[in-house]
Image 1 (cartoon, rainbow, N blue to C red):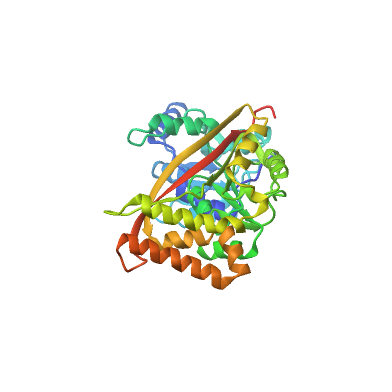
Image 2: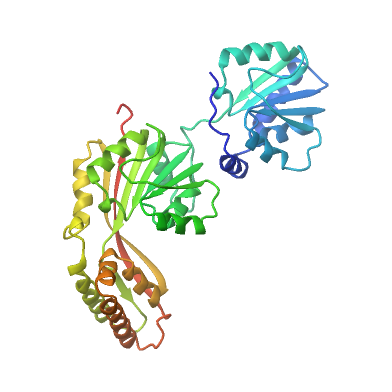
Length: 401
């Protein structure tokens, strides 16, 4: 049978932007083989499963005419949008039913596409349309040995890639909120699905989303609208502690591909501030008072410390391959007002707001004024350095699960 996975407009846009053009080294091997077996002139090349046209354009200078064929109208629309190739024609069609007379084609190619064809029907059709001496070139790339290099961290990048292997097709960000983590991951995947139970959060994410490969959906974490074994990565960023955790872990297991990975991350409340020529101990004592004032409004669902919920999940996961990372300190500059706003986004502060808005506002203003007093500044827009401690659970679904 023929498989059809790449027909969406957003997916086609990602293809056009990120898919590699086959290298000249492969092109030269193909043309040399064609010269040896058939000889010139090179009249007609047909590129099957042409997608957004990278291989078709590579062949165009070497043939009188090139025809790119794909079953996806969206992919062909992207291909047609690239100017400068007057001898290329794009047509919608399948590899198993080619619109060419018998013995009319010099070269049939399929770049990273033949594995999706009905093999026996395609090969019979290729035999029909090729000229005597005409050639077939089916090319692809290995997912097993990609290598990334960036300054001094090449080995670690390769290790991360090898945990799952390329390509990274689909990631799901569960409890995505307004989409900050989703956007961070989107550039690494062909498609990204972000879910949240809150219509307001999803609406906010949609308003700020510019990435064409992200789809936002409103749903609960325990019932994901995804097929079995279809997802490369499941993430929950500062959200897992709100889920029905056993049900979510079962659902994550269901949707993950074999060797797919799960990443559950969060941060602790003990954020630390620093400001030049200012006593950090005094600043952070005030911060601790702020955090302590919010403890009575903390949800009982979270227990006394959310990190224990993640440790419990780590221990309960039956996967042989799993990792626990703690005390990952990240420092970032931000205005004092942004730090205050960050704490005000905590569920405990929002509970206080619902119970007593005046008290919540007074508390926030009191803490902000005390911090500015110690810093000897008059503006809450003064930049401080905030140190946040993250922890993370990583797990890989077994191949045989």
